[in-house]
Image (cartoon, rainbow, N blue to C red; front, side, top):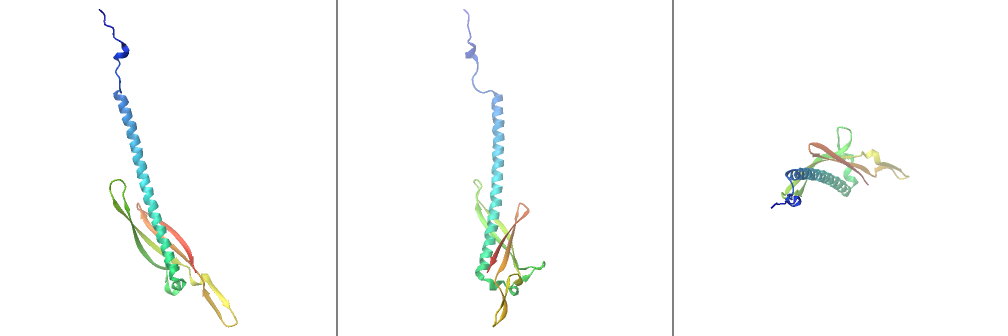
Length: 165
């Protein structure tokens, strides 16, 4: 009696160790790439959030000065800076956001330095002459608001300009 073995039935089914190792290696590379992508997205979000905060602060300063009116921005009310420009004293404004990258919640805090430069009275002065009087008046002021903040040890800044009438 002879035993005949079917070759097709004797082959083992499943994955070999090499296939499993290659699959694990590919998945490892994909996982590293996704982690790097998430890190880049988080850094972009923080950079954008910092810039949005600076823009909001600059616009708030311009709106505040506009609400006070032009009379509060005369050369007598401003300080003469070292570079010969008129301005307001620098101030530091802190903004905080609640963040949750993953399972850990924390507070993001950014300190902004605000520098305001205002055009001189002579830049927007109108001279009026009439039979009754001769005079001049300032009809507007240009306001430049520069906001600086640190991001990853690098100084970032924006400048927003406006005209107050």
